[in-house]
Length: 160
Ligand SMILES: C[S@@+](CC[C@H](N)C(=O)[O-])C[C@H]1O[C@@H](n2cnc3c(N)ncnc32)[C@H](O)[C@@H]1O
Image (tube, rainbow, N blue to C red):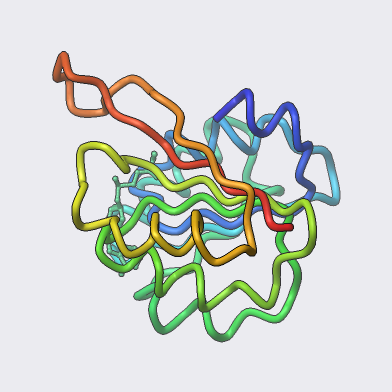
């Protein structure tokens, strides 16, 4: 995540599935004043915990937390995103992407988490980013979030 954010230097990021804000903090600490991270989280309790953590991290001014089901919230967005991080319901990754695809531009990067541990739920998503001709997509090994030895992977897809 740090490597992708460092390389692409996004000024507008969308995170789908925020939980208590761990990855959001890792992404937002790369942002400068005036740039933004938009987080969508379905659980009000998790969103509240994330807001507390963003405040503690001194990053509240850069992060907006929207509480709701991403499948309903994402289609309402109208501003462009330089980066999208998909980490909510694994079998909805493709629907999330299609909901915001019109808001991506050439060079926007989409990172999908847990594509090894949640295969085959993520297969329709992987088929799309690899075969639609709209993305340059690569599979990257990553440490597991779940404390297992097998590791996990992310799919990093750059909009063409
Ligand atoms: C793996 S956790 C996210 C972890 C976070 N991205 C991080 O790396 O720190 C997945 C989160 O997605 C949320 N979630 C699941 N389905 C969702 C949906 N349809 N819309 C928004 N959030 C959802 C869950 O409540 C949970 O907090």
